[in-house]
Amino acid sequence: MEFKAGKKSSIGTNKFAINLFFENSTRTKSSFQVAEMKLGMNEIEFEAKTSSTTKGESLYDTVKTEESIGADIVVIRHSEDNYYEDLVNNHDLKIHIINGGDGTGQHPSQSLLDLMTIYEHFGKFEGLKVGIIGDLSHSRVAHSNAEILTRLGAKMYFGGLNAWYTPEFAEIGPHMSVDELCQEMDVVMLLRVQHERLSAEENHNFSKADYFKNYGLDQRRVALMKPETMIMHPAPVNRGAEIADDVVECDKSYIFPQMANGVFMRMAMIEAVLEGDKASEEVADQKRQ
Ligand code: CP
Image 1 (tube, rainbow, N blue to C red):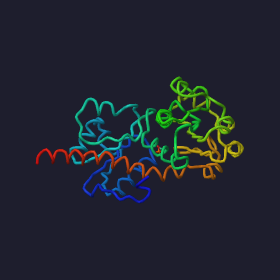
Image 2 (cartoon, rainbow, N blue to C red):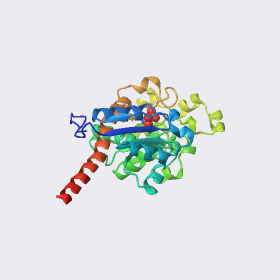
Image 3 (cartoon, rainbow, N blue to C red):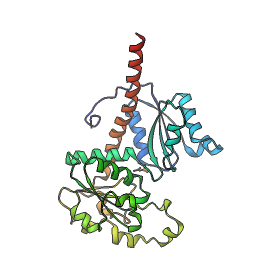
Image 4 (cartoon, helix red, strand yellow):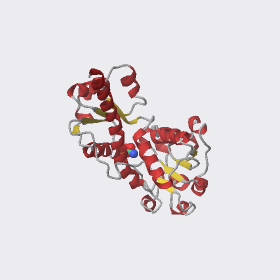
């Protein structure tokens, strides 16, 4: 929020960032790139398909290489859940690793920008009713947000296909119809259907029209909401599948403000990890004196 209010970066111009995206991304990658540039950092270009990972180089060797070359932080998006555990637990890497999304696991920077957007609107988390509707089981956003919002005192509810309401979500909150969620929630968070993670049979049986009718957010459902209810979506949105075209940018929608907040939140994340370096260097200097 301080960066959004105009705070200037104290990082200097001699820090290097590399964004290793092994899964497709529009928002997260661009947002980290803009955050790094606004902080005065230098970005090392990386494209997974032209990198030496195509010659068999491991993720660890790629990260160690970038550390050796002089990168200070690496942002990684990878299709493997918990890819970072090997990097953190089995190796002595000095480079800072920021998770840009791991498989169906976690999406911490998305979650933090979602928290920022909710806090700007309500000024609290305690007692808020937050409903997440859609492809829960494949969603790293749902996993991160359900966990952190519960810890912050919000009450979680879920909607969408029963098959996606797995036991881990059932432990956190009840399943409700989309109409009920629209009537009762303070925040309605939609998720796209992750066709790339569905089986061939699941994709074959999927009907976009049926899905939209049963679980999609249209103007009829928006009209059921309380005046202050927020509509959120991590995007990419699939207009006409989980959300109607004319709802994406309606008055209750915070989808594009979420993206705008993402830059400021990622600036704060990067600054926090690099400030940790500065604090360690200052302690080392004091010990030397
Ligand atoms: N929200 C999100 O992670 O979008 P991208 O996949 O485009 O980065």
